[in-house]
Image (spheres, rainbow, N blue to C red):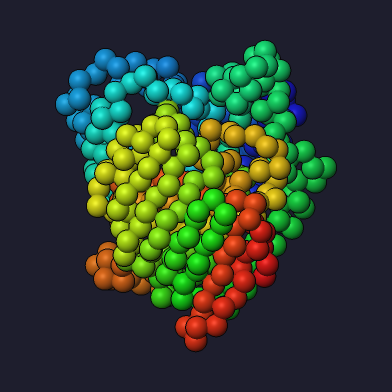
Length: 408
Ligand code: ZN
Ligand code: ZN
């Protein structure tokens, strides 16, 4: 990537993404392959008044070697200094900038049980710190091409061309191809905010999803739910935009209030494996059956992570005409693919999607049916003819989506 593009990405990540405030610290998570971009982001952070900026480089090949050669017990043994790092971070609250360029097939040939066990062991130790951190800090995820990722998306193109095509698609969908990306982002964010406001005013009891592919799903919403969009506000009152790109308006389903069947409309890339053509059956909120034409075992493994991964944690609305869908590209990366159309997620819910969460203890959240899990996996259910009707507490119907598009 040339200097100009690195600068543009860095500016949007720092100003729109984490909205870095003077005197804040910053941590950048990035691959050593993207060193030029790392330098540009560090510079941008300092220019915007960062106090201290650090970079954590992670090399995918080295991570793969670790998973291949280390024993399960070693992988599960999380050293105290690493736990302390998360503790410290939950106190200092630096802004976090994640740059993704992952090869979707990176872990495809590795033992998934080992990877999951290592992930679960780590999450158990750091979860409390991560939770506190996520309420008070600002974070963002952006993506840039790597040769392996580009080859996966454009398998028939030579490497250089594939990378160029993927970069163009990323710039387009993150509105960086615009002459004034800041203006474009402000306008887009305002539009999503308006949809969230209208949904909040409707105060819906449940949604009914219907599509010709067979989807017929009733999703009750958490009674005190709030619809959120692109820009979040942390508990320090600072706005930030966690995903670049983002097209969604989302909220919290009622844990035991989901019934019916939903068909996936795009493949799901999980732990380096691609699950295709699947459907998920729900009864009283719980996933009771799944069927997939490809990699059903991977889907089951994910759902069986813990009790919470059997329930939905997120309901998200995205029009079928989203710029990401318009590219016609399957990115094999959730950041993009989840913003292509309406999606649901099984696993952990977002606590800020419920009113008054600021003053709730863990116990309070549990009592209102907050779904807790070590994972959160988004999968796409939006289609060209998806209809979503919302019903309020008086039983009155409101058309929310018609033929895959907003109708409010
Ligand atoms: Zn989402
Ligand atoms: Zn999600």
